[in-house]
Amino acid sequence: MNYQWYPGHMTKARRMMQEDIKLIDLVIELVDARVPLSSRNPDIDELGKGKARLVLLNKADLADRSATDKWESYFRDRGCFTAVVDARSRTGMRAVSSAIDDACREKKERDRRRGIINRPVRAMIAGIPNVGKSTFINTFAGKACAKTGNRPGVTKGKQWIRLNREVEMLDTPGILWPKFEDQMVGLKLAVTGAIRDEILQPEELALWLITYLLTQYPGVIAGRYQIDEETLTAQASGQSPDRAAETADVLARIAKVRGCVKKGGEPDGQKAAQLLIEDFRSGRLGAITLEMPVLEKQI
Ligand code: GDP
Image (cartoon, rainbow, N blue to C red; front, side, top):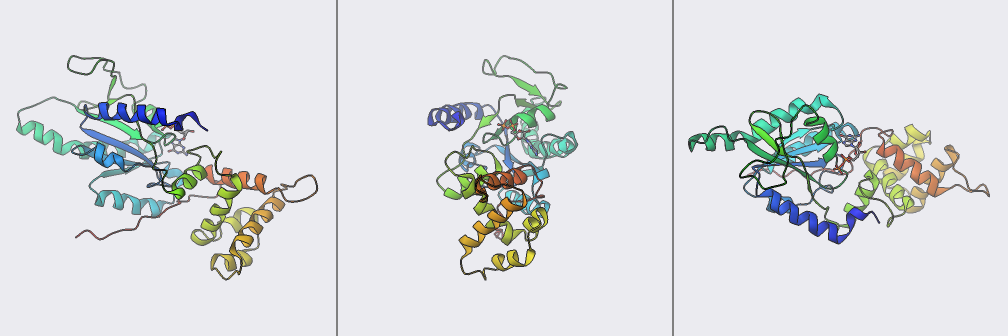
């Protein structure tokens, strides 16, 4: 298994996070816009209590924009500022800057009332492995920002990156672990590629993905693999008597269309599964979100 997931690493990272969080005013949490709940650890709500909170919906280039809008509302309803990001591109970074300003406003106002001036707001990036923390720090802070180095009153060894006159950011991100108790969390993270799928077989992931796509994004599989839409629609509407067998049949048909065959001429389900998952991860299936928020009305 990926070394990142060993319990020792998790404990150490959590301890570091607890230490670092004491130094900061603003938690900038990165989540994967395709799986905004599965890619976060709700412990951050407890860890970040009393801090300003900004949630960045990253990898938004791969996510369904209308779902991302709903997720923004979801996090805003829970008291977080939000921004939608593709960490690899500089274009969305202006929106991030203004979201950071918004998130910091209250703190700056409080400082001002107390007569504290020119004290920068300190921020920290946090998120699960592979969510895009390093990419984001590079794109957002990049080479343009000078490291501030150690200063009196700041814990030794901590590097701060000055983002602007008012905000500085810890250059080492806080690492969070997903909540694996729910089996679906592991499955969705494996589909997105956030965790290595050595426990779950590619075929298992692919069969789940096929069922999800047929019901939530009809036409996507038919379009990509030129498979007869009519039979797929029957499966999506649940008219099919044996759904599992039908889903397996879709995978077999993908295998056939893409020439994934074993030596004896049998369809190679494993290869087809890998191909489908790779098509999803790279965005070749289109912009797709794997979970939707249940929006509760605020009273
Ligand atoms: P970290 O472990 O949280 O620091 O994650 P990384 O910054 O190493 O990113 C993990 C992978 O996701 C890398 O292959 C990145 O290129 C990719 N990545 C990060 N942000 C984005 C994004 O917004 N969109 C897409 N498509 N890929 C991204």
